[in-house]
Image (cartoon, rainbow, N blue to C red; front, side, top):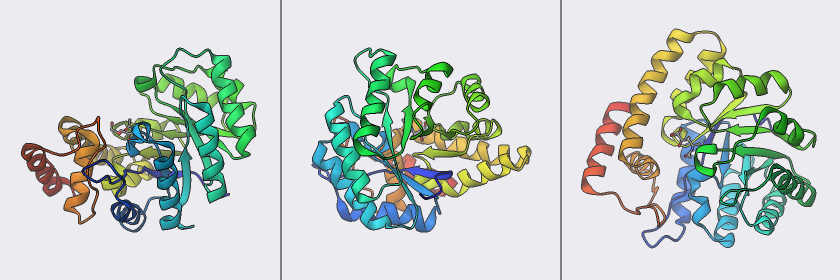
Length: 292
Ligand code: MN9
């Protein structure tokens, strides 16, 4: 298995204006991440890929294109989680056959599933695919909170490598690192990378690395090396950029920034607003000039 530590872009997907996948654009985004942002890997099919608005076939198409373009250049994680467990298993088998280094699955959302149900969901995907699993915990979107002991329950399965931790609960993060030092944690909020790295996370998975991957690596490495002043200086610049991106529309703005870098990042997928307004384009240009 490839090394799964380090800096992973949560891969953006290029869509045409009608919402269909723009394969050429997607390939360009992948190349940009590997060749220019120098990421260690790609997290495919996550929130940033606008995955939860896609059909099963479209999700497979993206896994296929990403593997075909990235080949063995970087590590690949396939997010296959779905409220439809049958779909998650089908996608998990598909990505495993394609050669993805690990699967990841969002905690099942919408219904208030019990922990026993959540555990069964992960056990089923692992048993059916035989691949590794990274729990994708993102309570602010799913409403699902998993505690320290519950993580321990999930970690009893040796295939569970760790968690993509998209939360600002640094007490929980620290308790997890202490309780399960052999399990990996990937930080999920780019704007909080420094404190997460200070607490010993093993890597980070983020949307903004598609355009800000070089600074992200600097923050991570400097923090791990104990050079906190320097790391904080770069986190400040990064967060000025992220603040601008969030205020202007998250994925849409990152796509416009990529376009200004010559990457055909396309449109967003409805129900998200597909196309940037003139005002949003102007803000993206300002951000590009200031930060990229
Ligand atoms: O995968 C991303 N989470 C979401 C992680 O997009 C929901 C993050 O990279 C954030 O986009 C980023 C901005 O808040 O930290």
